[in-house]
Length: 495
Image (tube, rainbow, N blue to C red; front, side, top):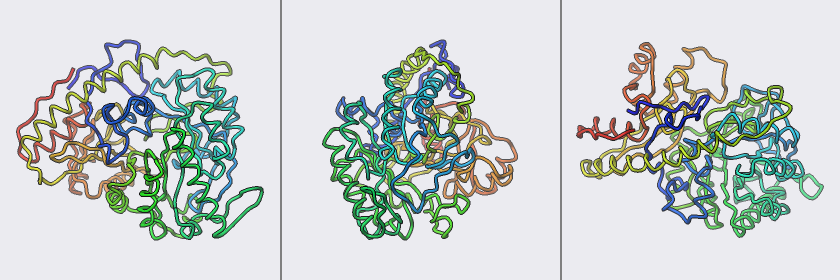
């Protein structure tokens, strides 16, 4: 294990000597996750677009942070799974915000965050309404931010209904990432998801509304692809309504050139106040989601590391530091200092090289010893980012799930254990939730764990291992797998 470990909490990069090298396994093949995590997997221009974008690259999400600013509250459709809440700090799901911002305040906040979080690489506008419908505020926010932080990637999320009128504006602003929500390609299915849309100054309902939305979404996807803008398609998996249909959606968006397809589980707890939640519509289980993702093999490349972020999320995927940057905490005057971010990027570039090299060695030795038919193993990891096992078990609100077999170590998904809420339970309740979250997984790697929770996990058939604290995820997962299979240990070099 390396003696010098980078802290991702309040990252200090004043000395390059404190930045450790790390290793990287190709966390998902280009056919599985679509993020194509190595430059040799895609053309150089595309690699430059995605290599530092935590949503478009599974590898990048270990190192880089995103920020959403809630400047676009107006929306032109109603979704049965959406309830936009304001002044809410406790729920972590799309459409929820603590503050709505003006473009001017948003730009000031972005600079403050960039000065404190050197991992920041992307600014997105994801509502809390629709960024393309509330276009004046979206465009002005991007203009103000780009003036002062030209190296920040800009992207937006939209339902696509109003997007065709603004695609050329995206080109003018050098926006090359767009997330487009598409839950159906059959308007009949859409009638069960969307009560109404507002289009051409008129509210429309039923099949007419669903047909218009579908046509505009396909038009948006085609226009973006024609202009070389990378598109991530988001789809909400709703059991009994569009779960089987999403196979067809996956095929269609691939045909139309989508870069990624992100199939997300429906969030439908009654307390969230959505139509589906109040009607008792359940979300999919982790097994059902994985089954659908597996069935999409050969279709559009899948994103599997989405965290279904709030509309004002700040930080690495899986964490939310938004409450550290509310407007009452942001100085009236802020000046951008690029030093931390530039040094951090240099470290990440070296880290990627070293992780790939170490992973290649470990994989080669495993390939030589493991039979092709050996059963795969799922391992949960508590991590705060940086590709390391660096989180205390008791502090984890989610676990990243890795699958390992003769083909190597691959990230497959994450499982949240905060029930989409950052509070509201005691320690005993939380442990019960963790055990439920880890159903089907018998091993968890963490930086540290107390005796009592470790014993409780063991009683539930889950082994908690802290022997690999602060080591690289892929190396540790491979080591555990090899030990379980009775294979010789691999001595991985770390610096």
